[in-house]
Amino acid sequence: MVEFYLNNQKIRTAASPGSALLDLIRREQGLTGTKLVCKEGECAACAVLVGSLQDGRVKYQNMCSCIMPLANAQGRHIVTIEGINLSELTPVQQAIVDCHGSQCGFCTPGFVVSLSGALLTDHRPGYEQLLRAIDGNICRCTGYKSIERAVQRIAEELPKENYGLEMLIREGYLPSYFSTMPEKLQAINKPPEASQAGQFPVFLGGGTDLLVQAPEKVAHSPVQPVSELPALRGVREEGGRCIIGAATTATELEQSTVFQSVLNPDDGFFHLLSSSPIRNMSTVGGNLINASPIGDFTILFLALDSHIRLRGPAGERTLPLKEFYLDYKKMDRKPEEYLAAVEFEIPQKEVCFSFEKVSTRRNLDIASVNTAAAIAIDENNIIRTLHLSAGGVGPIPMYLHQTVSFLRGKELSEANLKKAVAVMQEEIAPISDARGTAEYKRMLLRQLVLAHFQKAAPEMEMIDILKLMK
Ligand SMILES: Cc1cc2nc3c(=O)[nH]c(=O)nc-3n(C[C@H](O)[C@H](O)[C@H](O)COP(=O)(O)OP(=O)(O)OC[C@H]3O[C@@H](n4cnc5c(N)ncnc54)[C@H](O)[C@@H]3O)c2cc1C
Image (tube, helix red, strand yellow):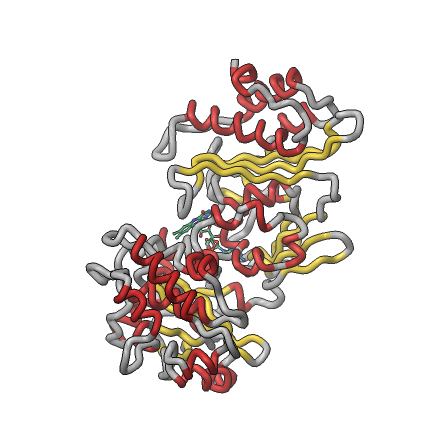
């Protein structure tokens, strides 16, 4: 049984915990304001708000219900457009109408849900924050300018005094039942029942890979939401190491102060990673176990020289991430083992950490090639620390062992970089596919790796990429 609130109504359902939440919303509950369009989390026409009880308050995030497993609704408040509607248009809806932000109207409920969710913060959100909340919502009619104007108006009109839920209810942004939700969720906030004994469950992170790749299989399998396994969530520092629970979402990682000391938020890594609703759902563990050769977290953690903790009936074991991937989608992992955490030594101040990604579209796209590097160069211009990873250039996410051992301890010079590029070209084996030809990917990686070194040694004369390409 999965139990949660859908708008102001308590739901207790025996529907498959691995099925998509959207199916229940539209087919069982008949709430057809939430639209089914791509069924791949790409457009957010199916956006709902997901409220989780935290420290006595409900924290809301927008998510794509088309790929959200029902199990992940357990104990939460799910809000559809019907749960936002009042007898008159809310100021968000009115701004969209007045600024012509809706044409065919199919995407509009998703925009209204995402924008209304973005209002539910402690601090009055500004234009940029509101825009970011709709970075996963796609509209095929308006060309976005009219939606941007509506967002501008919402930002300007938001009351400045006493910002918070009470004010949003009073001013007609949200229905009054929102204030009763903490108490209601308190009464049902318990983990879902365990999967059937004797069967290995499908471990469920956010479902953003699983429900795109194999929705039928997941719907008909016993599932185990990883967020309900002990101590899998959260980011902490312990003795100079950063330890990240595998069920930590991309958004939680982005907001973690410990992780911000590793990866400067201004670097833009998270802006290149899917979209807000997907980041609110997708977990670090799902990215690593998905084993995609272009998984962004995987490439990031390889260059942080991370270790992973796997837990199973036989206990816990730790192994270097760079030894985990054996072949295309094959890992050193037994089916009954789950990923508990990923951890790494927090780089010293002198280490420059760099992540680069090129994709066909700048936003909301997975990489053609991605790469990360941790580089420290000493006062004698010697490369003292080096870890280098690359995605999209082989069957697995790669730690570039040979290139690293060639360069580590050598002087940072054009001549050495040129030789390293040659070693790297021998080490990788890209194939031509929809994301580019093999030759293109070789060229991309070469330039992105040189960009890492340019960042690590900005005082160095601009590396002559053209010369190195010969
Ligand atoms: C629209 C869209 C955009 C995307 N953009 C990007 C992008 O820019 N970059 C990128 O890298 N990826 C992207 N993805 C892919 C996906 O979001 C990520 O790979 C994400 O991190 C997967 O996490 P999840 O929790 O949703 O995984 P899930 O789908 O829940 O799980 C993925 C796999 O991992 C297993 N699993 C999950 N957690 C555990 C665990 N703790 N232990 C054992 N097994 C586990 C599951 O059984 C499954 O096999 C995108 C996906 C979508 C739909």
